[in-house]
Length: 432
View 1 (cartoon, rainbow, N blue to C red):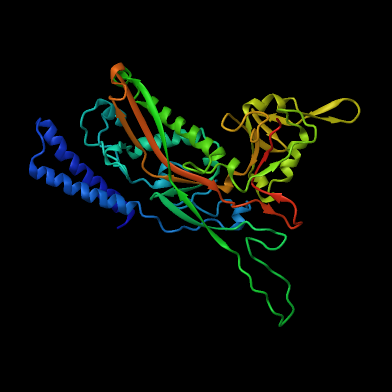
View 2 (cartoon, rainbow, N blue to C red):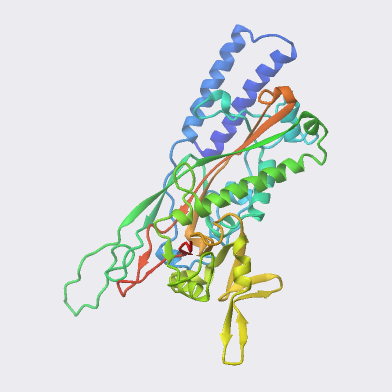
């Protein structure tokens, strides 16, 4: 069964079940024995399709080491279900196609239907894979696309990373070991000049398997029942709140997630290179030599894609950082500004609160996010309850999205000199 057919069958079965239950509620009665049997059979069919959809997908091809080295560009065109490169379009339809669950009623907003507490044929239950009653409602494609668009606009990592749409909870991606250039390339590739009729030594690069496993990110929204009833503007406020909220926590995980129950952030990745502070360097300071040494540890193939990720608390240090020139007392500003955009050593600077504060490891990062892959699961879920805060007449809503993320590199790269290590992700050690 194709994925698109499975989704269509799941939608049809769920709506059939809903119509039986809604008819009984409308007539103010319980289900008849025959209806109970029909609902039970529909539940079984729905569970079977969900189980089929949750099977691991076939492995897909990721860019080779030349792309991991930074020479990607536009050769890998976005395609439905395929790996979308950093330069590709990452709209919801680009990731998952234009099919899916469409909202059937133009007069009633999806959130309005959920908050009303009344039956609506567009509300499709998203049964949990572990607790059937804990599934909430599937968010229709159009609304999910709006939430996704808001989150993409305000994120640091995902717009600059590879993105793999996931149609199941787990996906394996073949990749290469980074290796040690003092002995070979790509985890085992060797080449040598060989005389005529000479023996060619046999060696092959070692491949590894990356596993993207969707992690559940749940956001909670609490507000009064009056606000839910009187909310104007087609609930665009909820769309913006959900989109910006998801992107903030997702971005922070891609930067410093532990990898346990959440994405593996670059600050905890095995491939991260950490540059030591200067001897005698003061606490909570950044000096020019820190930046030049960080640049020297950035993989050369990644420098053109890299950007500085800087915690906002470090702004005064960088604005005051200058290079003395000659004996006349002139100074050159290290962080330069042009048309409202800052740069250091020709690379753009992105300020954020999602890393670590000044003086801590991770307060300044030089990163090439094209060497990071994000797995994004289709199907946002939304649910609301009047019971959690019943005494104060408030609603508690939740939005659930599943995703994963990790660097494409399994380790830092040792250069041909046998001592220098480089990476697409470089940070400065703590100055405390």
